[in-house]
Amino acid sequence: MDESSTAVENATRQESSSSPTKQSSSSNTTPTTEPKTPSNNNNATSSSSSANIEFEPPAACIRRLLKQVLPKSTNVSKDSLSAISRASGIFVLYLTACANDVAREGRRSTIVAKDVLGALKELDFGEFVPLMEKFLEGHRKEERFKKEEKERVKKLQVERQQSQLQEKEVKEKASSLFDGE
Image 1 (spheres, one colour):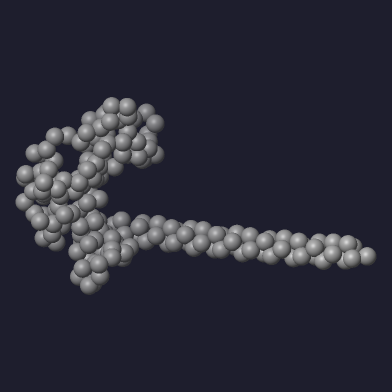
Image 2 (cartoon, helix red, strand yellow):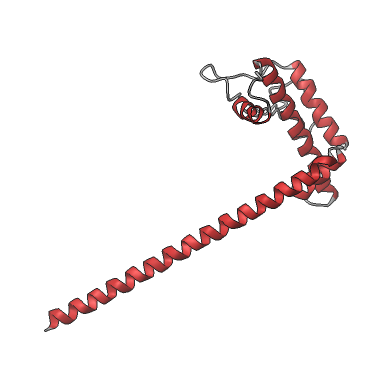
């Protein structure tokens, strides 16, 4: 877990030493996120590229999530929205770094769902694992359904094309028979 801790510490250190995330003047809903590299950040202390990345989900997504879980009478200030967005970004980076450690322990370079679940357990968020497993089960079923539906539509299109081709051949034969008389 040393790499994960270092990644979060570096991200937090960069946040406190850098200017706030820039936002476009036309919209406050999508903050600009750009990777911090040693060339544009003199405070980078780690050679790991994951330690130099800042991530902040779009404010519109966070606002939508908050509206779903909070009572309708609750208002959320811009400052608190920004703080929640930043905290969620840090959590995502921390969870990803930990899941990467779990994948590496399994001698894999690809993070899979079980790595994320293992990372949640390792970070003492084990109570969320059953909920995540249920979500993953539903997600996998949905993906399977989409794939099967796509294959079914493709098969129908092929059958339709074959039918049209056969119909065209029949018309051509009929036409040649009538023309020959």
